[in-house]
Length: 175
Image (cartoon, rainbow, N blue to C red; front, side, top):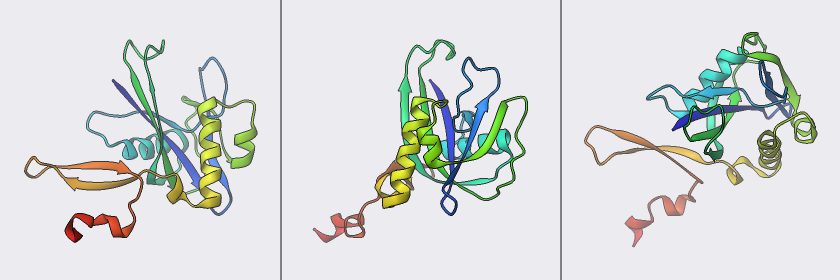
């Protein structure tokens, strides 16, 4: 299984999102920066690292936005993959993209990205998801992360899910 993390770095103040066009691809389509997860690396950390390596933009993990599972892709070395798009908050704004990986990199208006012909279907879909979240609140689209103790002593895991209303955080204690 290959795990790929993409970072949808969205600036809520300007309504712009960071996008790249990969070098050496069959189609020069706008997409979110990202790449393969390292062994033992959390997916949010993968997205933040890949955004930094490809674009020079520092960011912070906010939530998971979408997960795509695919089998039999020609460039997946015979493995299935999980392509996870994370919502990231920008901590810097000056682009210094890697010319070995990227053909272009820019901050693009989210509406323009959602309407662009030269984008991938998943990028367009996530752009629409971000537009919706920006207008009605990200709590309506985000899968937030909670770190919880494992049944194995001293270990923890990360659970991603929609936020629970405060009343339901400890409902078992109320029954």
